[in-house]
Image 1: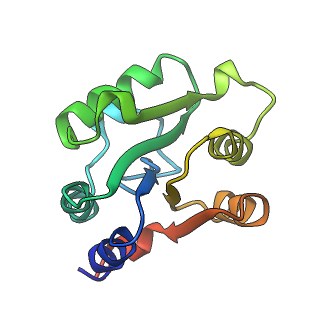
Image 2 (image 1 turned 90 degrees about the horizontal axis):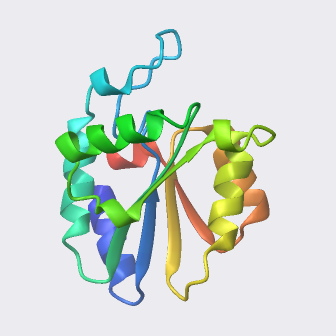
Image 3 (image 1 turned 120 degrees about the horizontal axis):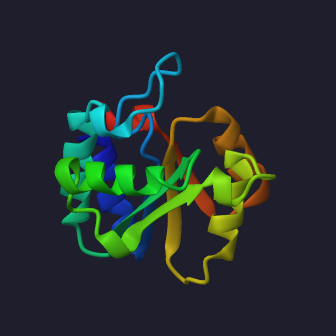
Length: 152
């Protein structure tokens, strides 16, 4: 409830675009297991918090996620259709490293966020400390939250 209230208070005075990473934030992430998104466990507490936030005025939810291969974009979208369908299809930004072979995940997310042309406040929720640090250092207009903020 803490995070919900935090976002609710922010949304009282401004419009928000909230970008949510998938792996480790709304879907389980085990570094030691092969990539098989179809069988990832949904993190229901986080999903339920975000679903509630999605109903607030002045808030719009987006996915900002990275995958290794182009065909995994469909896997992630299929997973969202089943486990978090309130993320609109047009608000799902899943970027494949296969299509951007020379860029790390942190650079792909930074480039995406810096390319946004909006007067709304941008928020990123991620679990990767390297990505959070990169965004903090290079995109001062983005409010950052670690995934642990979603859990009370």
